[in-house]
Image 1 (tube, rainbow, N blue to C red):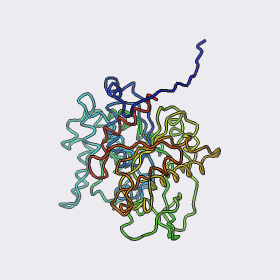
Image 2: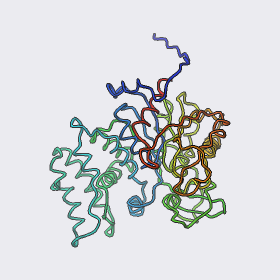
Image 3: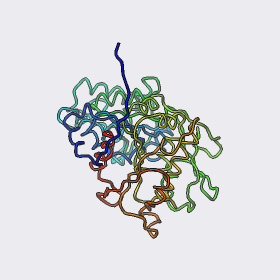
Image 4: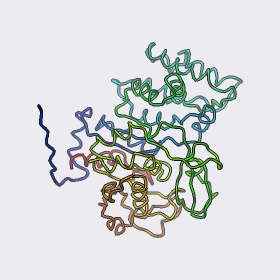
Length: 407
């Protein structure tokens, strides 16, 4: 019989740690890290972190209802595949040992407009029949699988389905969803296998739900796209987010349960990260999904919040400390056994632009109010994160986050 003992060792670690570079030698045995994210916010991080570890888990929100996701959701009444597909492609093996031709196919978008009647359908047919130039380099067996799922999509799509700028990867996932039990877990597994994905992507919930928001002036905003891109229609800040089963002002608020795989993943990692991205429509909905907050509290992982640097429609009147307090309060509200602040967050990673009260408006920096952050008992670590205004250096961020695996 094997006896196991758990001991707690305290050590001092420089962050970022120089030893993180060693992970590149054996990324297949790299640290286990869970990243709560939306679709695009953590894309650069996903693309970079696979150099260091193949054991990252991206837990993705499933509430997008804009762009091509809106077209798919309206046509089929299913969850949106776009954010899953996007994250999978960013984690895919781009080397010669991988399947770059598969990535090329799944990332392809059909033409924006019909330059002649039926041309978009012809382009789709060329992928189904493997006559498209990008399909020519795909192994025949894999091309047949892709064609099978695209054909299933083609047979099910409404006659007026808008194919302009449609992602081939999204259409493959829709076909797979219907052929294998109306479940995007199967579609995710298929694409992960075909593209040799170096990590895991897990939808936070398996249901088909929408987001709503209540603003401080009591205005109700329905739909993730409307909350994220307000286009000057609203001036009041967001007060709270809620879930809906239908995208309608008349639909009642509902509770949403987490995907069991997402809960399980959080219990077996070295680091849990609240990623950069849309604060109220990506990170907060993850924490409101029943089961996630309690899984975070119960985990022995280090818990790190990456603060956005640039203000947007979702962060009106917010500072980093206010975002931190909102995040923790949501965790406590949705946890049946609420814990203390540090049960949910132990460190904040912020860009070092400091607290500049004048920079509060749209397109300006979110103030890093250091004293108020420290007053919560959470550690603040500031770095020159920006490559460009509002865009963090993904390699520096990867090294910072993976350094916590040494603690």
